[in-house]
Length: 156
Image 1 (cartoon, helix red, strand yellow):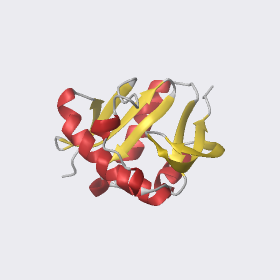
Image 2 (cartoon, helix red, strand yellow):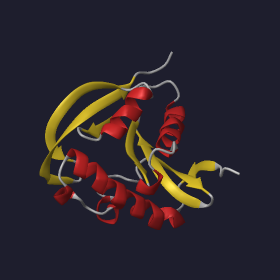
Image 3 (spheres, one colour):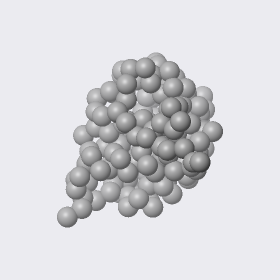
Image 4 (cartoon, helix red, strand yellow):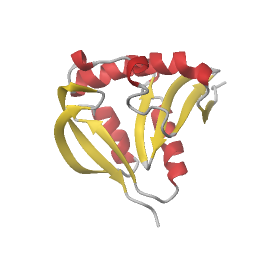
């Protein structure tokens, strides 16, 4: 029997799983789109990068947190899935959950160039690339990075 995915609000006891997921998936993201030397653990950057500034939800399967999304000020600010759970629909489910909370408003996000899996997901879910910019990597400004600023237009 298949297990059921549940998306629910973040709870403080999710922190160990969320940091583990972020740290593993962030390395993949940086390997493909920037520089792994730019890696900083979530525990070191969460406060300064506004991790809790908006709503945070987790995807849970069989009682285990498998991914999370954060949404603040009409922007998807964080979306990570456990690398062992890539391509199982968790990222899409989390994204759709966050988009539903936006109702009909436009939603923005940034994806690093080279993060082809995330880019494909966002394009499939109605986002379009508004511009591509090179600048300093958010969270670790010592490193350059190029990212696509993407927008899902508001729905009317």
